[in-house]
Structure formats: structure tokens, C-alpha cells
Image (cartoon, rainbow, N blue to C red):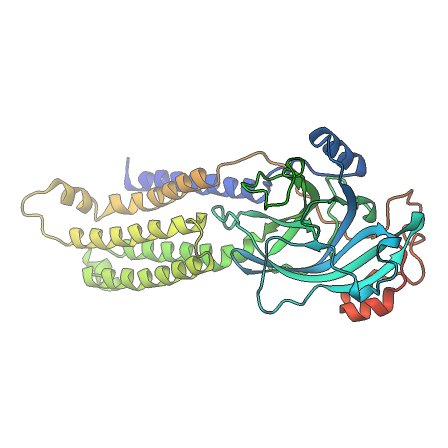
Length: 433
């Protein structure tokens, strides 16, 4: 084949690798790990507890949650604010002022960030059947372990484990699903619709139970209480790919193009050499400058995920290091005299350094395709659904007119106010019609 046909073959192979990488990126963007054991209604809760814990005799405390803000302080710390409410018998705290009622829950993963507000009583409201709802405003920082290996195509499940303040496990928390308009699997609920998550999007929320086999009884538990279910509220969030692409991947693409342009300037043709003037020292100088740019970018991403395993995008940095080193070595060998008819030097000098130029993109993109295949191995693809734009603290009845169920004084916008203002605005409020 002539030189033109070789270039067509090289470009075709490179384009094929680009298409393969693009398809795998698309699958990764639309992929979400399926969530199991979601509690979608009260019958699911009863069925779960009856089937897996038939001998439970503890009192059940209905509990609901509403998230107002969520922020990643670091790769393993999440700051969460919102409201949590519980249903109690009215006589339990009948003679106790609201602000003196003990907080009925704890977050086991909470850490002291030094800036969090203390959990604050918001309001209480009597309901039918001699019960009352007590609501608290909370701010907490949770320590959690996340898997970032697929960054920037990763999903995160921010889970909020809720324990009853009764450490002896005399009561079990059950999700108050009737407090939300809809809790089916395709809907998201329990968070502020206008919540700001920077580079994240909420794709799903749900309650579920998990059990843990602790290796101690803490000195007080009975055998029948060791494996009691623990209530979780989960927010599945999806990272925005565009921001990470612009910050980390696009600069690598530009550097790869600049490196290839440098490789094209390596020539012994006197006319071309007079135009570009690129010799061995010039090539090494360009590659050295690009090396430090790549290095600084990798340091930035490593600081962002300190303590985490190597993430997907980081694998491209060693590829660029090898590419920059390879172009520098190629330049040195190309201009090196071949008095002994060395086969490697003959191969490099063939058609004015044609073979390394033809192999540049297929080798680089082929390596990137292998990395993408191994790290972003396609999994089961499920639909990505949009978070519900309307939330309600009201139990599900037959919704003929969603606004007609709200009392005149009930205003969810007031939950955007500080706890003291919420108290003034919502007291008294009935969650049950």
C-alpha cells in the first residue's frame, strides 16, 4: 500500500476506538445499579418485618425524613440538613414542653464537624387516635465510604442510618411512608425539589432495612434483640459528566493532540525542517513542558480523592506519561546515526518516521479502550428517572386535588426557614386529615 492508504487504515482504526469508548461512556452515563429491598408502601414494611423478624415484639415508631440540603465536605464526608418527624402516643410527652422533649433519634455515622447546628425542636401536632407528630430540624455530617473507581461515571448512594434514641431496642423505627405523596420505585421523594447539589443529580430515594451482626451485646441486649432491623433513608445521586470532562479529560485530549503535532514535526526533510525547526532538544523541551501540565492535573485529582483507589480517569495519566516519553525517545533515535544498520533504527527511519506516526493514535486510543473496558465494564442498564417536583408530608389517600388536602395554614415553603421561624409558622399543624 502507498502512504495514503496507510494513513486511511490508521485513521479508521483510531476512529473505531473512539466510537467504542464513546459507546461505553454512554452506557456508563445511563447505567444505575438496581436497588433491592425498597420499601414502597406499608404492606412492604409489614411483609418484610413479618417474614424476616416474625418474633419481634418491640414497639414501632413511625419515622419520616425530609432533606433540605446535601453537600460533600470531602470524598468521605457528607453534610445533610433537613427535618425528621416521629409519631408518638400523645400521653407520652403530654406534660412536657416541646423544646424539652428528648430527641427521638440518632445518626450513628454522625461526626462532629465543629460547624453543625444542634438538633432543634420544630413543632408538635396532635393527630387522630390519641397520637401526635413531633418534628425536629437537624444538621449532621455523616462519615461514609464511597466507591469512586468509575469517576466521572459514578453513582453514589448517600445513606442515612437512623437509630432510635432507645439504645436498649425497646422500639423499632418504621418508615412513615404515608407522609409522602408517592413512594413507588419510579418516584423520588423526601427532599427539597430545588435542592442544590453542585455536580450531582438525585435519581432515586427510598427507605429500606438492613441488619448487622454486631460482635458484642453491649452488655444489655437480649439475644432476640441483637439482629433487629435498622432503618435507612437512601438518596441515589448521579454525577454530572460534563464538568469532569471539561476539567480533566478535555485537557488530556488537547495534550495528546499537541504531542502528536510534535511527532509530526520530527523530520529529516530539509524543506520541512526549515519550516518547523524541531530537533531532538526541541521535542524533549515540548514533552517536558507537557509532562508538568499532566502531572499537576493528576495531583489535583489525587487530592480530590485522597485515600481512594485509582479512579477511572487517572488511568489516562500513565498513558500520557508513556506517550510523552515515547515521543521523546523516538526523536532521539530518529536523529541518531545508524552506522551499524540497526533494525530498530531502520524501522524508525522508514519513510521519514512514518511508522511511529501511523501507530500513535491506534496505540493510544487502543490502550484507552482497554482501560475503559476493564474499569467501566457494562452492567445492567435501567431507566433513569427524574425526581418528583412535588413533595407532601400528608398521608396517601385518594388524591382528587392535591392542594385541597392542605390546610390553609400549611405551607411547605416554610421549611426553607430557620427552625425558630418554622415553629412560629407551622404550629399547630396536622399531618393527618
